[in-house]
Image (cartoon, rainbow, N blue to C red; front, side):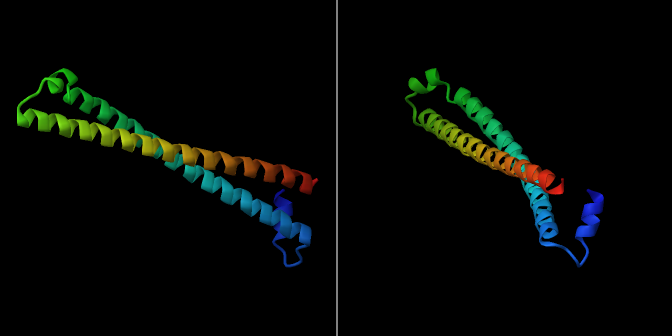
Length: 126
């Protein structure tokens, strides 16, 4: 393989050499991009988990029993704010989870494409 790469760099590249080098470049590019997607998926998974915990914590703050029987303005307002924070954090958790899933899907597709190219490269080098 190393010998092939060295000879492929020569000015006398054949069409076959050029095609193989292009496939190698694409495999490397796909690999790098998939790693970046994996990193972003993990980042968004962590953000989703954090937002889920924050929503759970805020649910405790809005204590349904207390809020259901609240009559004074300040308590009602506090309960509404806690409910709004909980909903916002749930939305953020869903948004982050969806983003993580999107990056995971992209990474998987890139890895599959790279694996297909590697099989083609093996066949081309035989």
